[in-house]
Amino acid sequence: MNYLARTPADIGHALRRVRKKNSLTQKELASKSGVWQETISKIENGLPGAKLETIFELCAALDLELLVADRSKGTTDFLEE
Amino acid sequence: MNYLARTPADIGHALRRVRKKNSLTQKELASKSGVWQETISKIENGLPGAKLETIFELCAALDLELLVADRSKGTTDFLEE
DNA sequence: TAAAAATATGATCTAAAGATCATAAATATC
DNA sequence: GATATTTATGATCTTTAGATCATATTTTTA
Image 1 (cartoon, each protein chain N blue to C red):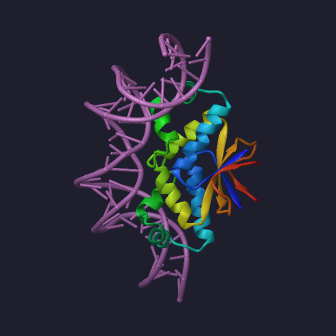
Image 2 (image 1 turned 30 degrees about the vertical axis):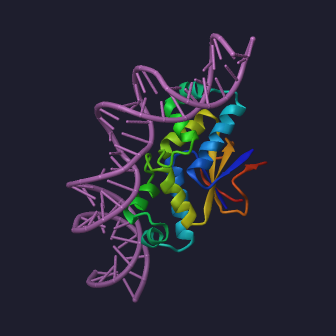
């Protein structure tokens, strides 16, 4: 299950989807990740200046990683693995 | 050609590899991307607080995108597509 | 090896992220 | 619809990223 991202908002949306898919509230993710709920809300809504480190903290908590890939023809919608 | 990233340093290293693969200096990438050479240097060296937006600006200039993926067993070394 | 080119680092300034708290607003539940 | 829960937003504070400039250091080239 991959989500393709070309913008900060894409990352935020992907993180939200995975969070919900795991039936976690932002508050629960906050506890898991050490990132504040308010911060998670902003990131999920596409905060352009979100820190890379914070993104990786959320990825770790959601058991995710990022792949740096050549730009594809794909859209930033849902991608099946 | 994918590079797997679990930390800001991984992202920085991936970006550097792709830049070099395209025979670009940091200064040339700076011109392409609108991000300052000095900033690129810091990011390539693993700046934890690098802004997501800045990362995507570099990705766009290098014709890259990110995939949000489930954590794999892989290491953050070079991965062949 | 010397010179040129590329990269890294330091200083200053402005804007803003994240922590922290509070709470308004939105959503979910019954 | 009422209530509970979740998410979004605003305020304050500290830290720091990025822009900008300069230049030290390192790497590359001839």
